[in-house]
Amino acid sequence: MPTISKENYLKAIFSYSTELENNASTSRIANHLSISSSAISDMAKKLSKEGLVKYKKYKGIMLTPNGEKAALKIIRRHRLWELFLINVLGLDWSEVHDEAEKLEHYSSDFLIDKIDEFLGNPDFDPHGHPIPKKNGSIPEIPNVILLSEVETNNKYELIRVNDRDSELINYLKKVGLKLSSKLEIVDKVNYDNSISVMFKKKNITLSKKVTDNLFVRLIEE
Amino acid sequence: MPTISKENYLKAIFSYSTELENNASTSRIANHLSISSSAISDMAKKLSKEGLVKYKKYKGIMLTPNGEKAALKIIRRHRLWELFLINVLGLDWSEVHDEAEKLEHYSSDFLIDKIDEFLGNPDFDPHGHPIPKKNGSIPEIPNVILLSEVETNNKYELIRVNDRDSELINYLKKVGLKLSSKLEIVDKVNYDNSISVMFKKKNITLSKKVTDNLFVRLIEE
DNA sequence: GTACAAAGTTAAGCTTGCTTAACAATTAAG
DNA sequence: CTTAATTGTTAAGCAAGCTTAACTTTGTAC
Image (cartoon, each protein chain N blue to C red):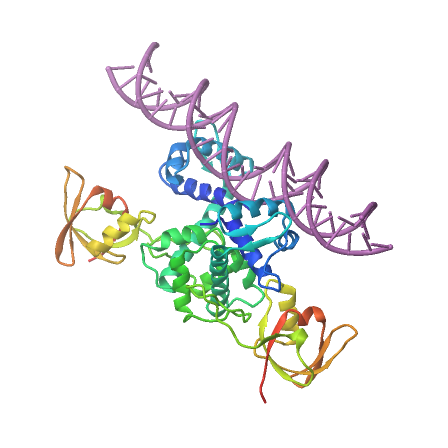
């Protein structure tokens, strides 16, 4: 069993590994966890010894199959807790991340399964992220597109929001956007990469910073 | 904010302070927490510096009002979680203690209040222990008696069971005893201090070890 | 009331997970 | 291709919370 700290490293490595490159840099993880980069180097060695990570000095950190399994387990816990806190206890979108960030480390497999069952074995969390299954498989929605990469004049449905940035969540609440909101792309502004959309018959502009954290799905007409 | 470890010390001190003597001995706490007694001495000094505890070398440890407040806060969390796990998630009597023992340290005040509200601000946990209120007050049942101190021929209702001993819980399950079970005292055996009771029209004998951990209330006829 | 056992304390040391500071490798600019 | 900036690593050190071993106080049996 990894310690709490190790669980957090694995999660962080995972979240930076799924992109183009399949390996996470020291500074990214350091920044993500708000920890000095020397601590990352240190921990990389330990995780490597435990076979959870492949680590080559100066060459980044990569999860092994075992490491990925462990990471998915924590992510599963996190997302199930988030959904539970919102759907059952009535917490708010913006309140659940921090709470789940702690609970994920302190619930037995047994309890997590009970929660999973109670929620009806859900596939997605409140932000639209897939909840890894007990066996490690990951439910996916086909054709997920980043909102910053859509095409003008098409209609899209908002299906996923990056969590862990509660300011973004608050912003969306203010604007009225939420999962399943329908957007029509009016214009893509080249100058600052912002996007102009029609939403509930009102025209609003979303900055690159925002659209880089929202995922949508094309709606067939 | 006390650390997790300190929260556990405070809880342990509390649970040994409410008896006859209002102070807990080093070895009792050490034993209770499965920790060496030197660690207890150490921590006693730290807690004392923080004003949570009164500590005189060789003379035991006593909670200050602030320490008691902190202890009650953790106990409140523990008992609310236990009730929640049983009533909402359907866990078993015997499964909740260990789970709650972890969750109690990692839930915000806010979350605890949500759970409290969800449960309808309950006064007692599944073992019949009072759940301290947010303001620190403790719901009480009048006339709680230890089962080892009852009188022959009276009828009693089982209203509280010491938790943290899952073997006791399993034993009770096997015998069929649970909260609100009605018992008639048939005989008190002086030799081994066991007690013979009528329960569901069957005669069973309960050892001193058992009756020292069960609390009852006299039923008026 | 002494002597010894039991209980409590102190000291030294260990592990985990951090920090800062000094140093090394890599990358990017010209 | 060299150099400077960036990024990563190593080393030393610290705090928390333990441990074991040696020592001190307290309580008890006689």
